[in-house]
Length: 130
Image (cartoon, rainbow, N blue to C red; front, side):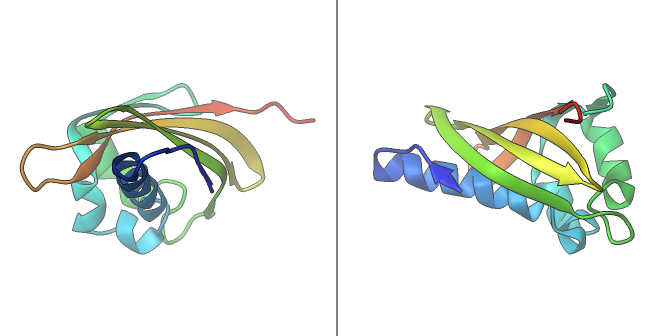
């Protein structure tokens, strides 16, 4: 993984966002309450399929989507993080799921109080073959 943070506060924030992103790739986390807690209540995703997902739709479907217990694993590479504001981290990386590549972008927002970092926005863009 590539770190672009220059100071310790940035490094901690980016590491927390990366940890959350990778935890959401774990089938056990996806099928548990822990996975749900990693999503911001205002979460929105535009998937690689072009579908728009709301928080409610994602939470309901999460255990059955790619990366779940009975589906292809998500392989992530080249993850980079940038602290955009004290409570906002932007991650970019590439994924491979069942041989299909996508470029991914996630915004992680730090919640108020002790809620920690939560996935606020995610987008996947397919990479054409070849």
